[in-house]
Image (tube, rainbow, N blue to C red; front, side, top):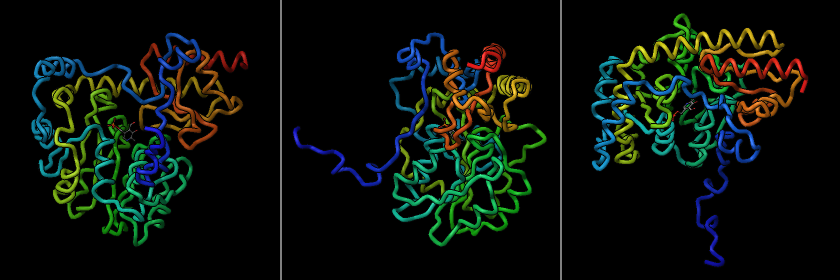
Length: 369
Ligand SMILES: Cc1ncc(COP(=O)(O)O)c(C=O)c1O
């Protein structure tokens, strides 16, 4: 209708919300730039694909697509509770970890509340909080790591939540156990502390510590995890939150009744049992990152050693490194979009994908174009 202005009807927070950009897709690259056979190394997906057990379970479950899914994701929730040694009342299965982050914002944030995040960090924390009218307190990274001391210093009387991410997207650095424990000891306890562990399965064994061991006496702690990364199910959208029963009860109130579809629930349940796929994923990532470190060093690029399945690379003498890779059919994530100009974030691939990336990088530095 003429004269209708949706923006005038909408909430101010929504009108002002920045639009999330997921980066260029291979289809767009083909359409806009005429580059066919594009390789996307930008979204930190699993290069091995989904677990074969998950695929089989998903195909079987599809036959029941006419029936609504279990609103509680009960079987998956029970399996997770058993696997993680938790009470099922502490688990909420969600439509990707992203939904858990949104639910935290819906349930807890009001206009004017404050939220502390690192700068940069995964953008969903900020977007979810801004949607609810919260004010974001951004604390710059120190040497590519979250500065926990400064983040504690940013917590004030109106702070409702602090979001930590480990390993951190976009730098790949992880929190150490000692700094985490020091942080917990001083955390005021009248706000939520959210620890996003989307990439925790990729961590080296010697760096890993168990965040779920810290819930006793800390009802304000929330840990989020996902099946999107190491389990290779990004397209099915399954994640979960671990939290106290009182927090869970509130998050559950604001979730959609059938938030996780039945194919996703079945696939995640099967993936949980596929230790072989998980171990192979970890091994391919470990070998891939060691190889890419070597290639980057030989090509003269600085990078941040990673505990995740992506590497943050400094563009160095090639400010348009992302564009140069794109011309060679490889999509990486531009640092500008991640709050780190002068960098690109590259997802570690499988052997064939890393071959192609290596060729492209060597070509760029030898041709200079
Ligand atoms: C740090 C971090 N947290 C959460 C997510 C969202 O995960 P999901 O696919 O489960 O929504 C991502 C996705 O890239 C991520 O990088």
